[in-house]
Length: 197
Image (cartoon, rainbow, N blue to C red; front, side, top):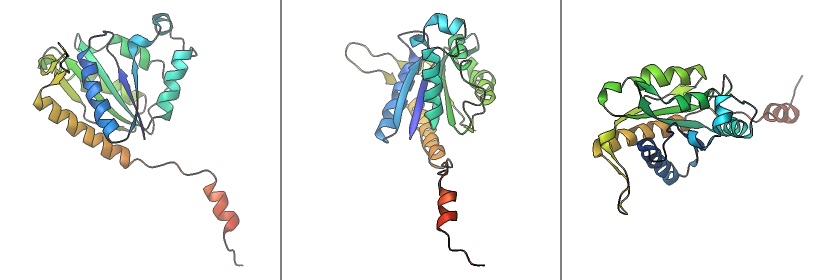
């Protein structure tokens, strides 16, 4: 199983990435292959000019196409997800999330922006035809402490519980995804079947 983590944070020091690192660790413990992509790793010119055929855009498209699931994390700015994330999502083809399970995550300065996940991020992910959209998790900045003085980042217990519950739902959704049939299966069964007339 393969899950792509997409960080919408343009900042190198990011609470969103603290959340995604927790997700990465949990998924690795479950032996899930994880790939992390960050918006800040894309060349700005390619994003601003929407170069759909650039090497970074093709890499993004190929990774998402190969993934079973996608975890999208973003900071909330002015009651919506990051503009840099929107530009990256615009590089994906229209049906890029078909047959994928998607878990949205967001972090913001106050609980007032809690609905940014449902009213801003989820509609964009739905437009990309996500097969199954999970509820998502919104974190308030004070629930996440950056790593300091050799100590790892800290996530408040209540937030960790919600995040772990969402990851359990992600695992369950990934497990119940229909697997594609081998295109040779029908031909093999027809050729090797015992026919009687």
